[in-house]
Each structure stands twice: as structure tokens, then as C-alpha cells.
Length: 568
Image (tube, rainbow, N blue to C red; front, side, top):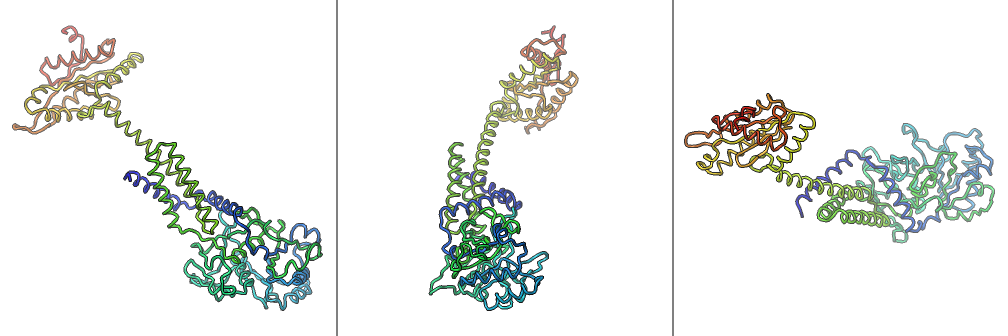
């Protein structure tokens, strides 16, 4: 494998894993939407729970409030009547999703309800934690025989929807269970299973010990796993339409209702009307709280607990997918890489959905997102690498390797361009022609390698002595040039003298007689000081000034003037 691909994959993974770790809510709503789509889509490929028919919801809906012509809160005498009619059908368990707290205005109502509850040990009264964790419970007279049966608080995700719940309340030591959710009590009543004695908690794993029917477990799984906060996903059985819902008015008035419908059933009594504000967002849309309890209870009745893939395994999968995409897309064209990436993302969605159908949850959102990020990043990396390589090639074609100055061919292009600008806008332009004095003697005496050392050092001196806007170049052999736009003649003279003195004072390499010293002669041509018609004429004038510097004894700067013109 290409080491660059490996390092790039690791860097990419660490970067985005850090982003998700530091900002856990980053794109979180989209991740929740993917979770919801898994729930709704999975029900297309799976049948409702076999226990769905065992659950009947007796609902106080909008029609019942009109037909019964009663206002909330309904009297306990009404619920006593309702309970009497329900028990004509001999239900297996009756659960009230209602808190009967405090005393009624009419004591007789409480007496009637208390008489109806007496002797019935399969009635469940939950409780609720209100503000400041104040526990709201039904009146003790009603619960003295059966006790309170679990809490019914809802756990909301950050978008306000209900996808999870807390199956337990843990003691302060976080290793033992204090109480259970109402749905677990329903499960215990249905199977006549003592949840308080037989459920064991080991770390983030809870097991239903000694659970069997006829020597065989009736559940798909005997254990379930909790998140770090102690919650778990609700494996929704489906939307409201999946459940058998009987409006209260039909039970009370006997319209299209037979007590046999409730025979040996789990009966949940609660409100489904919107006026009670007990409806919540779920993966299946708005759903009454009683139906959420029904869904959760069915999950326990079936033992179809959703096992979430551990975080370490999820991130390992993401890393391996990133590594695969980076390696493949690095070595194939961009269109093929896009097709490959989309295919991997589609496979990830398909595999995670198949796992979800088997009650294993791995949200593919981060996998798909990282697939696309890896594809974009690796192609950006490839593009950047090409750009950088082209820049290197361009530099090789425009910069002299030995001196680090621009090559003659590129110098000519820039000279012509700058000369046209100076003519058009009447701005100053000067040219220095630099020749190393006695360079042939250096080559003959010390060899061409030493001559190259001299050229290299002089190239650096020239480059470091001019402005960023100036253009230094190797004109040919030991001859250098510098183009100086927008600089007056005094500035040009100063620049030329700086170059000459720095070259003269530099030590180039050691010889038998000490460090080698080198000098240069510099000729200067400047516009508009001289009337120069073309760029080639500027080069000729700078060459003439250079020749005059050589003629006068070398190691000096000569600016072209009319006197030189007359001599030449």
C-alpha cells in the first residue's frame, strides 16, 4: 500500500473523529433521521409482534369525550364503572397510564374505585417523577394491595422525539437496581415472572435469569445492553394503527364491544386525545404516551432487544472504510472513484439495515458521511499534488538550477512585457547586465566545479539584494541580469552598487593563498533617462555600459549615457 495513502487515511480519520468527539451534536439531527428511517423501513420487511394481539388499549379519545359528554378529570366513579366492565372479560393484566393522586371531591367516588380495585392483584398503578424529582403516585388506598408498578417518565432525544427509555432506576452505587420501568412490570405480570429477584445487572448488560416457559425461553434474547447513560433503544413494534384500540365510550356504552375481546389480554388504559398533551414525536410520527408504553412492553414480551454496536467497533469500521476509499480512489480516475464511493456507501447502508432487521443497530450516517469526506479529500489531495508538481515543473522550466535565478527564455518574455508597460504608462524601467570578472581564469585554475560554486553564491547574493518586484535572471554563462521596474535612476545605482560590493566582500572557497575573492562589472541602461525604442535596444545599451565598465578596469558600475553612446 502507498505510504502516502496510509498516512493520509490516518490523518483524515483522526481529524474527523476528533470533530465528532469535540462536537457530538454535529449533524446529530440527520443521524436521528437515519435512525427513524430504519425503524419505519424495517416494518415493511418484518411482521408485527406475535404479542400485538395480546395488547388492547382502552383509550379516552376525542370521540369518547364527546359521546360520554364528560369533562376531564373524569371521576373515579367513572373509572370504577369502566374497570368493572373490563373485568367482565377476565383480562390478564390491567395497566393504568393515569395517576390517581390525592382525594376526590366526592369521597364516594374514591370508595367505589377502591372497592373495584380490591381483590385484583393484576392491576398496575405506575408513578411519575415531576419537577425536582418529586414522585407523583396514586392514592395509597388504591395501591396498598398491588403496590406501585414502575415509572412512566419519557426520555427525549435532542430533537424532542422518543427513541430510548431508562429500563431501571439505579441505586447510588450504580451497580444495583432500585426500581424498574412500568413496561417491565407489565412484562413480569404477563409471564408471572418476578423481575425484582431474577434480573441481574452486570456492567452495561442486564440478563433475565431463570426465564423459561415449559423449559424453553419465550424470548428472542435473554439479555440486553445499556448505553453509558443507562438507556436503551425502544424496538418499536410499529405505528398506532398496529394496535387494537377500543374507545372508552364503546366499553361504557357497550357499543360494538364484547368483554370477550379482553379475555386473557394486557389492557392499557390511557388518553389518546390531543387535548391531554400526552402525545409525543417518535420514529412513527406523533404517538400517545400509552402507545409508546405498549410498544416498549411488546419489546420485552418478545425479548427483541436492540443491541447497539460498540463505539470502538463503529470507529474501527469507519477507519477501515476510509482506508479502502482513500487507497482505491487514489489510484483510479475521479469518476470511477465516485462510483466506487457511492457503491461502498450503499453497501454500508444495506448491511447496517440487514443488521437492524436482526436487532443490531449501527447507524450508517457517519460511515456514509466519512465515505464522501474521504472521497472529496483524496481527490482534493490528488488535485493539490498535481498542482504542486506542475508548479515544480514550471519552476524547473523557468528557474536556473545552479543560480536559482530565472532562465534566459523566461527573462526575455518578462522583459518584453515590462518594456511594453513602461512605454504605455511612461514608468521607469532599468536593466542591469552583470558579468563576473576573470571567470574563465577561475574555471581554468580551480576547475568547473569551483566555478559553479562561484556562480551559485553570486546568484544568491543577487537574488537577496533586489526587491520582490525585481526580476533577476541568468542571461548566459557567467553573465547575469536584473530587471528593475518602477525604480528611479538613483535607486538603480544604489541597487547595482550593493550587488557589486556584496559580491566583492564574499568569500567563495579556500585556496592555497586564502579565500577566493571575486568581482563583477555592471552595466546599467535606464528608461526614460535614455530614449530607448525597443526591449532589444535596452539590452544593447546595458551591454555597452558593461563593456565600458570592463574597459575602465572592471569591478565597477557604469550607467549608459550619451558619452558612451558617442564612443560606441
